[in-house]
Length: 411
Image (cartoon, rainbow, N blue to C red; front, side):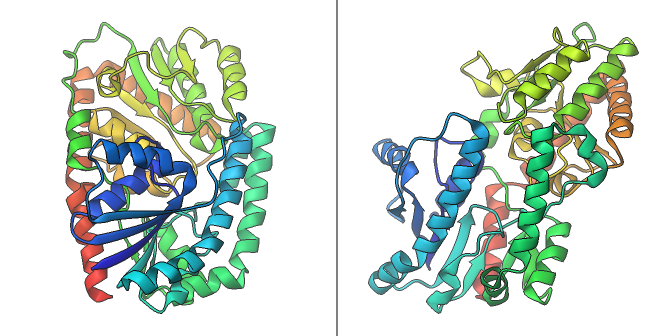
């Protein structure tokens, strides 16, 4: 089939949405002719990929927008990316109509961004339109606002207001209603988008985050021998926003410390909450145990990741959690909040899901888990292997393609 794919973010060398967009379009190109609308920011990366032989003959690109540099401030960059996406979405229809006259597409699909708040006009092409997989329906729990900085509280408040505006947008509702299918990554998203669509028919679960076999193999590095001599090592990543729950994790590490258990925590990414979290770490007396905002010195990400025992990221608003899944592939034990995306791929056999109550109680529960894992390193290794198997089996490229093929066949 000839697929028209809207992928505002698509970067073979990027992170988050960019690498996810690349995973999707390159996977679908193994079975179909794929014609991709993407942002002009990714032109140089895709041209580099072409010179390295990474782009097959079945994958075609057209670029929309301008390739402007990102603002240095992460919060400003987030706002700019959102405004860029709105402009991108509006521009896709005219470009798609012209391309459709040349090619004659069978199906149109939005791949990235995975957000419902900005509707795609591609349902107007007169061919089956698949909106997603999308998410962004997650709501930050009110009971956990006390864990946020003032800036993060303001952001979550504004996001809640924006959600209400988007719910009443006629363009959003029309897109939800007219889409042939809306694949979503977790149960909460089904309930939310079914109400927006006016019916549940056509809204279905689809584990949208996945890894090609090459990435799975790259993350499968040998792990060090099991000993109890080194401190428990915890990993975290993802844009450092309040929603990631790192503040709760820091309180949990401080509680573990008071019980005689040392946990060394390395969060490799940066973001708008970085300064707040650094101050909190110092206040809790964890400066010698916690590294925030510094990437690995090692050139081999997978080798560095294999040295960690735990992935600690109790995110309170995540549709999926690519960094958590990568850590699981490396054999880390995930400790997540029992909330939306991570609660779907972390099972009781391969990790720990902490009930979302309030920051104090969650920190206590996490500290208990950390102390338990520190005291039984053999069990920690076994759970880590189960975590690796969970992602390999349930979140492979083949599994994703089978899900998409079933939807395409219906279309």
